[in-house]
Length: 299
Image (tube, rainbow, N blue to C red; front, side, top):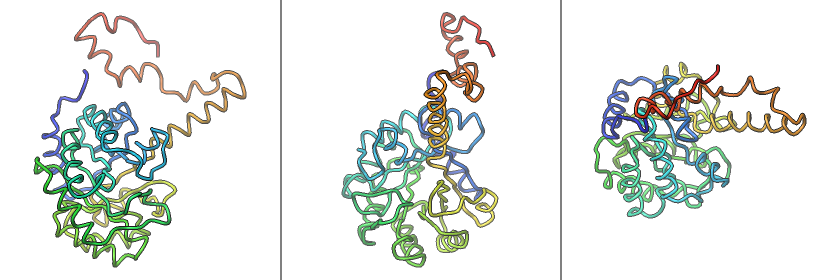
């Protein structure tokens, strides 16, 4: 009932333990708290909270328009709804090094198990778009050092994302990843790798966990979990996938309603009321107050 019973500290500790095994952990992106509960129900390893999805949910493009308050609020709403660890996209840290340290503490208070800070300039843009620009190495290192300094729970995962591959090539990406690990990053998110060989090169370059971003319509192929596990990737995220699936279905449904004047042709494709109530745990609320769920839901 209400929120997850596992504490944020326990989720962070469990996430660290799972990462230490070297196995591949799959984290679909939750576009709202209910989808986080669905991700847990389907047996995944964690939940990813995408900055692009938070922006899109507000009707905004992913160009650094969201604020720390908006991201922390949404992260808290999602993280508290699941016993799974949640990783959140903290963009460039929302300012200078002192702001980065505050960002880390705000997101730690929001209950996430980890976050990533990237090395793009402001205003940033989606990592799979052309025309990106990154800060110099010294600035990128300052961001990560500030993030590590701001952390209070040592189990909070501080991940460094680098977008330099699309600008200066793979060698520059591996060099920067090494520098970010030396600065204290617990994991590396190499954005927009071109192929498996590039992920392999990154895996060989650093001795911390690495993340693969399997976003649709991006620069990387959609590799399988088996392919990624075989080369030693530790985390795979599907940041916008559920939002795209949901919005695609919503658009098709609206087209049917517009053309036919009824949604009857697509009712079979909808999540049933009974399944929604199951995810919402109506029965758990009823155990607390028997007047809440005193009816039968037809299946």
